[in-house]
Length: 279
Image 1 (tube, rainbow, N blue to C red):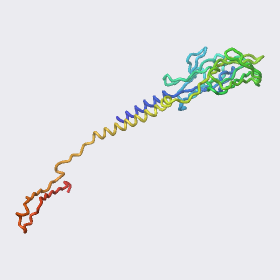
Image 2 (cartoon, rainbow, N blue to C red):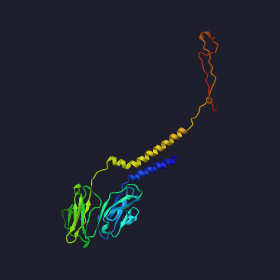
Image 3 (tube, rainbow, N blue to C red):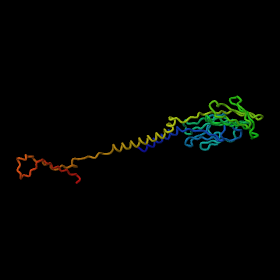
Image 4 (cartoon, one colour):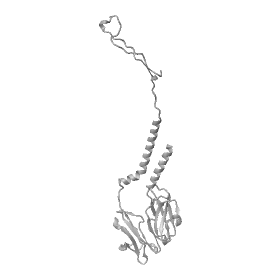
C-alpha cells in the first residue's frame, strides 16, 4: 500500500514538472521569409529536450492543422519542402498529450516574388545588434537595397545589408526592403525582448517540482517510521524480574547498658540483597 502511494505521488510530481516546461519553436534556416520552392524545418524543443510535441499552423487554407496534414513529421519536428505562397501563416508547437501547453507562434512568409528580407524569426534581446539582409532570387549576389520600417524609409544598404545597433523596444515593428529593378519583399515583424535577470520567485517556481519531490519523500519516510513505532509492543517488566533479599533490623542499645564483651553493633544495619531474575 505504501509503495503504491509513493508511486502515485511521484507520478503527480512528474506531471507538475512537465506542466512547467517551456517549449520553444526554432526554424532552420533561421529566417522568417522564404522563396517559393525552398524548404524549412520547424523544431519543438522544451527544457528537457524531450519529445511529445507537434507543430500546428494557421494559414489561409488551414486552421490548427497538424504537421502530418501538410509536412513531414519526425519526433517533435516538421519539415516542409517545396514551399508555396499559401504556406504563409502562423506556426507553433503544441503538446500531443492534450494539455494546454504550447509555444509562442511565429510568422513565416513565402514570397512568390524575387525579393525577400532575411531577419530574425525569434524575438531579439534588448541591447543586441540586428542585421537585416535584402536578398534577390536572381542574381544571388548582394545588391543595393532600401529598407523600411512600418512603411517609412529608414536607410539604404549599399551591399544589401543594414544593421540596427543596440536595439530597444522602439525598434519593434514591421520591416521590408526593396531592390531596385527586382521588387519588394514581404513585411516581417521584429520583436525585442527585455533583458532581465531571473527573479527569486521565477527561480523558486522552476525548482518547485524538485522541492515537492523532496517534501513528499520526507513525509513518506516519516509516516513509515511513525507506523513502525506505533506497532512495536512495549516490553513488560514483571515483579518476578527483581528479587528482594532478607531485611534484618537489629535494635540499637545504649553503649552504657551493653556489656563490654557483647558484640552487638552500635548501629542498625540492613542487609538488602537483590538478585537478577535471569540468574
